[in-house]
Length: 270
Image (cartoon, rainbow, N blue to C red; front, side):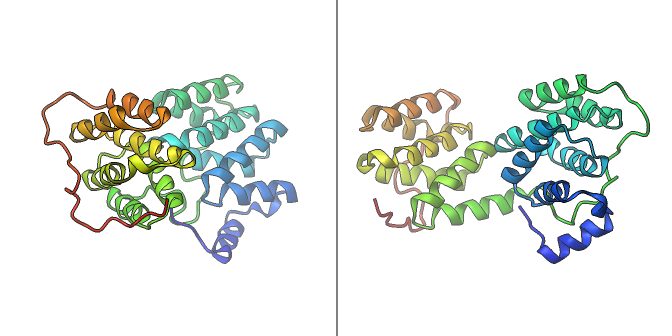
């Protein structure tokens, strides 16, 4: 995700004439425009719970929703669902077409369902409808990264040598359902190298690695998950390996074997 400097964002806010907002609303606008999905979710929940109906603020939300929903990954859905509900809670017919578009074209059932619920709260397509581009988001904000950018960034995190970065990368791989042989091979090599020495407080990280492999839908990793299912010390890790093995197709494919990844794997401290 690309972020703007505080100064650049302030200029863009001024350009969009959000100076009319009350201080609490301005704080929410800043959260929406942070580029961070966690802050976006928090702001959306506050707007929903407080039934804030200020169009200057809702236009920001509508623009973000229209920009993000077509390429939303699994980890984005909860935030965007709350954003849709926040827009619906305004009961402002200006956003009827926005929510209708999400209902019609969203690729995620949960997002479609929440947008539909939000749409039911609006009186209909009353007045001038909000259209994409009506609010000029800061350049690059919430822009979809290319696959190459994502793979490069996640590879760096996975090979950083610490479990925190490894878990974050695995979670994002799973969320994006990335079909990347290079990232899958790294995950498989780390699993095969270390799964027998995993401690209880580290199991969650390795469970996420199995999720990342399972959601790749790549048959190449069936033997990896099968080995962990059969030989993992912890039941939780065996269970996750089994579940994710079911996600991989039965098609013929060269199976990953330990050592196939030919770059150095960090000596993780366990």
